[in-house]
Length: 252
Image (cartoon, rainbow, N blue to C red):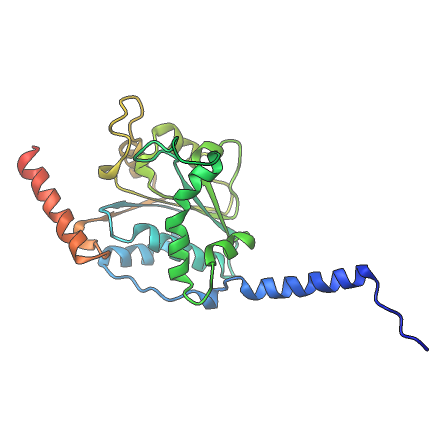
């Protein structure tokens, strides 16, 4: 008795199942996430407050790890099956310190350059997983958007990281706050001293106004990072301290 050959559909189904199994093995899990303990008292204060906070603002000096620790804690919670959070949404403005009009590609391709810091951070967070950011995107655990496309949506069951928020005007910050849905939390990170908008007279940073509003909200927790919190490198810390000294002595 001759054996019947499997149908093309059966072969395709088997290949699809095998692909899914292989793909699942590549997806970062919470057990793949490296452990990063807080390096400064301000980082520790954020870690301690994070589990019970729904609105947070990490404000202050460059090189203090604001975005990194926000992404770390957010992914830690999203990958924990015991929480209701389904994804991390990284949101930032498309405004840059230089005009991007000369860059090749369409609008989406031009803004992809802003994803690079998060790709690098995810690789550091998941050192044993290749293309960690892309894998997290494939599994819908992380999403990326610019403020131009946030209107009209509601972000439920998400942890929203609003990065470089000093480059957002009042309208952009207002749009983000009014998009936050049920069972979500939001983390803002920025430093109004680093704003790329100050040269644009009619497009000033909304962060200073936003900080005043946040202070009026009981649920909002603000963490101030100073040059003493800089962890990027000793030379960055020395430079920031010297720059602040210069501004105090020569520009006031």
